[in-house]
Amino acid sequence: MAQELSDREKQELVLGIHDDDETKAFHDWTEAQAEALAQKMGLSLSDAHWQVIKFLRVQFENTGPSSRAHEVAEGLEERFAAEGGLKYLYRLFPGGPVTQGCQLAGVPVPPDSTNPSFGSVA
Image (cartoon, rainbow, N blue to C red; front, side, top):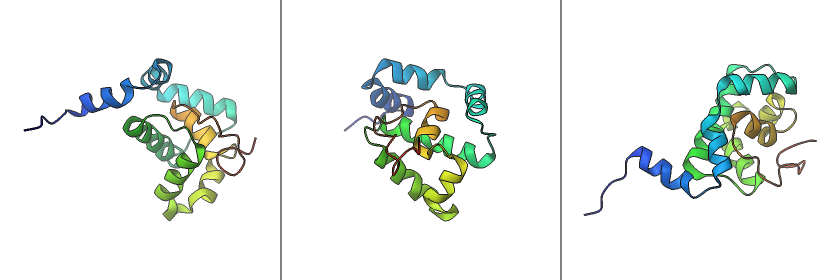
């Protein structure tokens, strides 16, 4: 009979295969750091922003880093479809929901996130 893994063991297995710097940044992240970074970006974080940030953190915790911004954008669009999808997300994160969202969530920004159609308008 297969032994069931605890949530912590699953997390260690998923995050343990990724670069130490990525997981360190993820685990060292605080809401205060996100607030300070948001202020530098000219954003005032609302409950709506925090929903996106928390979604990105859970997604990273469950799947590890994404190599493609498109995958992250699709996940965001699906999760926030009822609110307006990517149009809604771009209103919250004018610098790109993938780029700014990942930065604020303390998760690695996918390498292709500067593509205007996927992650950033910068």
